[in-house]
Image 1 (cartoon, one colour):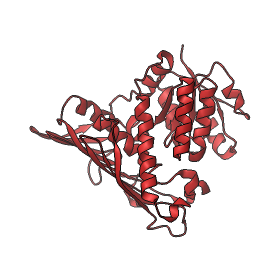
Image 2 (cartoon, rainbow, N blue to C red):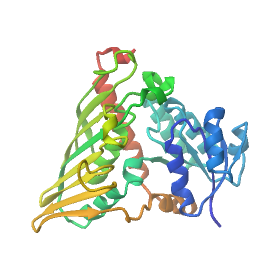
Image 3 (tube, rainbow, N blue to C red):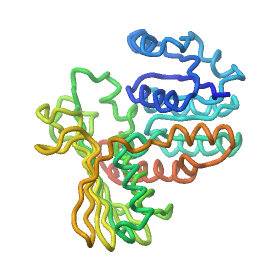
Image 4 (tube, helix red, strand yellow):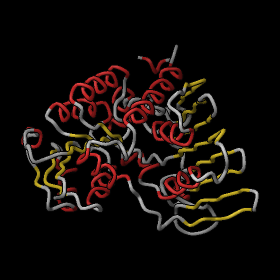
Length: 338
């Protein structure tokens, strides 16, 4: 029988990708809770099979529902996740899963206490075919031992389409906590290590003085015993690009390197998911449009079998720990602490 899942909190459009990755694998979407009509109405039209419920307890207390998805406002996700786990549900949260170390500690405690699965859908990895293919190539030894990663996560801000909470530091957690968490997870994954630290980090607001709570650029320098990494994230993508961001990842190995142009090959090939491999034999472009995305299928199997095939629980937590540590390091002694 397929698993049944429901959603609580639709505040980020990532919820659509979270739902779709499970529907592709045959899971049954049975219900959702969102107090905002402007979010719930288009969502309900897209997924008419899921019943909208006015009280989230109808979802939490339904024993037939095994998995809860959430894309609530960022600083509210931890409470949803903890409530779900304490009601015997597994969780798939949008990134970031939390916005503070206190929330991270509370989620860890609830996960240990309940034995439930807590997963963060880091979509720039799990829902991006070129990143999945790069993982396969690295695991096969295509570029030798990974020694460095360079992750660039530019985004388009679209001010007139963003809710007020998007510009409130306490609600979105800061740029490194938010979109930087994608990059932290990929750094750990390609480094194949959980022994990681933040060497340096910065944040700033360079182009949006009318939004003093917004951090529109940030970077961080990361290290494991065998790998270093640099990450830059920003909200500067111009309208002329034609997509929301020119996300890139370069993975340097001892015998070659891989570069991903995840969402656009500017002035080059059409479409997205472009992978370039450089090794001793030469250079290759690999089209990743048909690469399988296993995350949803693996998470369903984990729910059924109590395994950790979609993502090790420890890496899920460590990615957020790194993002929060970078955010903290960047803000020490600045107005952002207020």
